[in-house]
Image 1 (cartoon, rainbow, N blue to C red):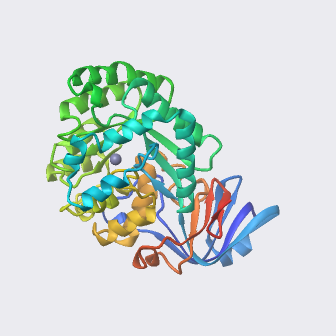
Image 2: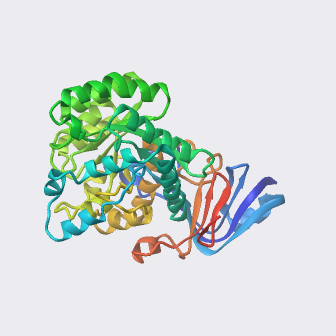
Length: 423
Ligand SMILES: [Zn+2]
């Protein structure tokens, strides 16, 4: 008999991608589906996935172990959010209202709004205050079924403030059930005090910030925002090459508002991911496919910015990319931390099927964070990160859009959300 200390039974449908690496092309939407299923784990690791009938014959829940009834719900791997800016202080709802009244993003940015207003409030917050905000957001995300999240810096934009932001994330993650991967995004935008001296800011990025972040092991990746209002291709190449030299992996904010050639740069650098990609060229996407760089779709941000372009979901799939789906959770362009919401937009507006979007929000996202061997699918040997949704099958997650229906969340083999309530 297989010994377990946690079992989930009463599952109407279990749906999971399989494998230790990202899926693409026709494999993207190839899920393992088990009806009348059960899952079991021991010491945080999955030991059984199969039918409840096989479970009864082969698994023994040890005394003191726990059995959870999914009550006819659907089980998926815990969501992996591969792109967030959640370590911020201060929301920007007044700018949102201005935008609805016709103001443009550049007008708002020109008078110190936009990213720079979040930089001001994040700089003003202490490490402890920021850490509490981050922990609250981890809690909210767990309640929505996310068990692993990436978090970027990029609202400090000075040596001390970037280190403070990353340290606040490290502090919040300590002892928290959320699995956290951090990314240094000092190349988010040029801070106000360096508008007339951007070369000095770039020198600080490569000469001081990246070495110190790498030495303190405060981030696994570095990211750069390639955009007319942020950094040019050569600047981003310099920053990210330095990051690679210091042992960090790289990701990119690429071709969101125009074709800046950033998808090709991501391929050239062997980036783990290039994200957004609304305006990426065919050549850029082809280069990414050859390099194995993940394309991260951020469809809720495309929606919230009221962009004319749709999220390029179908294009990325057809280009043969390993496609991931993430939230882009941040106070300006996507104040929404729900991966289920990202799935709605990925499918209804970005052209993915439900099954493709599920792989994108789990296994492929984990792969883009270098975590596919540990999480992102429900298979023996992987960490027991899973969600029970109160729907009879996976289609209902998108079909009945607008309402998250998470009932139970298991992170690292511990039940952390039960009956919709965070424990
Ligand atoms: Zn972003």
